[in-house]
Image (cartoon, rainbow, N blue to C red):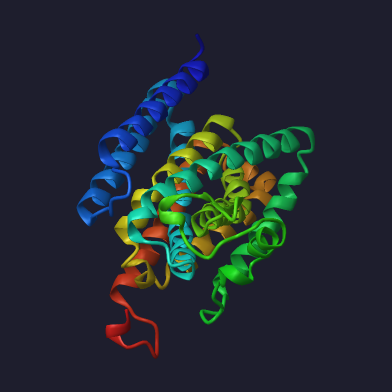
Length: 318
């Protein structure tokens, strides 16, 4: 068995056992998740991700391992943006807190399935048409710029989204949660509850974020193992991160600018890769520098958010 096959096998076993542990030991049906439980689950997923990084270092070397850790950190930071949108969706459809965990789990598992499909298609396209990397680079530059200059007053309204309008047009929807069910019968006919709508919206919104994150990961590494594992580990940890940070996510005012800088950096790196290779002949140095830049940008934006407030925003509003 090759080292790559061994990594895939270990990764699959770890994910299956972790999901069983999460569902069977750390999660209880229709029960609100406490900060303590969320902290334990978050540490659980982070330890698994870091443990896999160490195992990857042993099996594949420092270059691939650092690429994986860089990609994971970027995906993890992008999760905070997901959390903010998830909060808006739950609030808009008045989801009861006892249903948060189950709805998030189903939505996230759907998102993982779609991400695997997206990644597979993306990797195949890049393998067939390498020039697409330049398109991805330009897209990341544009996305990073738009994110950096985004207006704080622009807020996502779930009921005005194209996804919700599509569901409303083609499916019979009801305006309640069906006491925790996704499909109920009214007047002898099946109708879909608000929980069903929320699950679809969560998965769809994650795919929108994936349009940024997957090209960005490809800018960090071309290794399929790195792309798949970093995405899946980060997304699986999103549920516990939601419960841990939902009351504090609005305080990370400048994290968006940090993420935007990372996207711009990766986009520029993809476009200038030929010149970078001439400047840094050692690929290990390139990977290490990219890792340090990503860590510095994300950590710096978080620390700056903690110690600085935006102008015109009172302290008690943060």
